[in-house]
Image 1 (cartoon, rainbow, N blue to C red):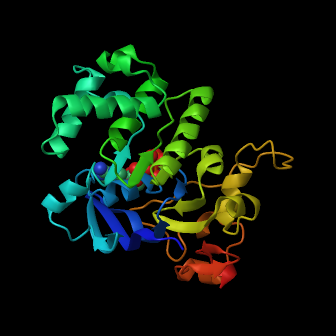
Image 2 (cartoon, helix red, strand yellow; image 1 turned 30 degrees about the vertical axis):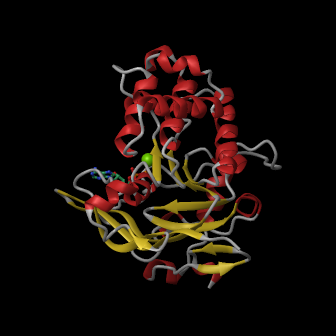
Length: 319
Ligand SMILES: Nc1ncnc2c1ncn2[C@@H]1O[C@H](COP(=O)(O)OP(=O)(O)OP(=O)(O)O)[C@@H](O)[C@H]1O
Ligand SMILES: [Mg+2]
């Protein structure tokens, strides 16, 4: 039986700006099981990163969590005091970003950055122990330990990205949020990186939220996929089910608009229309203005999440 590591309940996150309030995450509920890889996909601006940052309470100003709960091992992150959140960040929950160069310090060697991370968080660890730990981390990343003496600019993009993961994992967290971690990598290095992530997931019993535009990436790695649209969850299901029997018209549109050599696909059909204005979102279902199967109720009432063939799908077609 799987243990729930993260239980997000009716989360709403907003950015008050001069022309109104951006409802970046608008009523998201999602459970993650320990040890699973959850792919989080959806068009640009649908709220993926905002959801990721909310879990660490690292929203950029003026972002704020308006309501809802984020239970991590049963404890609500939303209502924790800042001191407790600081203890979670890095140690229990790690996040890696798109561009490793902006996250690594260009002035310090890789080894020094590992040592500082360890010494900041783990009281009583001396430099020698820290270096030993860093060396064994590098080994599991497939990088020779001599490279601890190098600086970030001396490494290739793929290697820097692996180092970033190492930095994220050195404190032994159980939840990793990876936000578009392979965007700056070429396809070969990207594939190696995803393999590494899968290995680490097994080795450390890590739970991963993999945020990506690239549905190919999630197909390869994720156990389940969450499809977001306009700050809401359109559909959640096992990877294979989402790819082979997508239920939500948005998921269907998304899959039809990407090339897939395995599926028998006569031609690509880009999705009509543009993403919703999150300051003035459409009434009812946020997807209804673009939905080829729109019904009367869709324009009036927000669909709840229905359970259908193992999918969780927010669409009136499945009521
Ligand atoms: N600091 C901010 N101030 C105002 N609005 C913001 C801010 N950060 C994000 N938003 C808005 O919140 C919404 C969700 O943004 P978010 O970055 O979470 O999307 P995303 O799904 O990660 O997109 P992408 O795929 O492009 O990274 C967008 O409409 C965005 O414009
Ligand atoms: Mg993003």
